[in-house]
Figure (cartoon, rainbow, N blue to C red):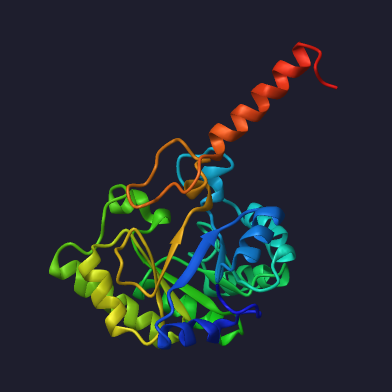
Length: 261
């Protein structure tokens, strides 16, 4: 378990240098964030995946600034040791750079320590402006959920040499502008390994093989609380869905049979 201290952006480079894998999970509310913090998770991401796993949407695209700030504030209030980053939702940073910086700053105002934006070299100037304004940025390349329509679905990235070279270029450009770490989503393992080897900053994989400097998964997937689909790279560590149904069914039976109260 990671030493019980408040992690900073510099902690992640230290973990990479020490060859200590970075542990990351998503959280969307006070209590689960509190429990993840107690478990020793290094990075808690308030993901725009909230739109799918809590609100039942088919994609992350309908997440809004209002929703993301609401969930970020709840998570940040709970966490004492882990590093908290928040996903910037679709259209909150794709417009003007000025609007992107202002929107990013709102996440720090509610307690996040960084923001995550999707995209490579096309958004390097946006990341640079945020960082120059004092807002740490977590990069995200590979499969980009906010670009699912452009990419033709949730397709694994980096299979061809041309795709691999493009992703490596994206990663290095984001590193050059100052992102402190990089999420690599649903990318061929060999390509993710090449990116990780080329980087001074750590990479955090999701569905991108074992060679990244850390791993992140959606909390609801590992708890068995999201059953619309299970990503092939995720792992269910427990089945809270069944436990919830069991407990609620027992309560209903007790009430109907007048065993409770």
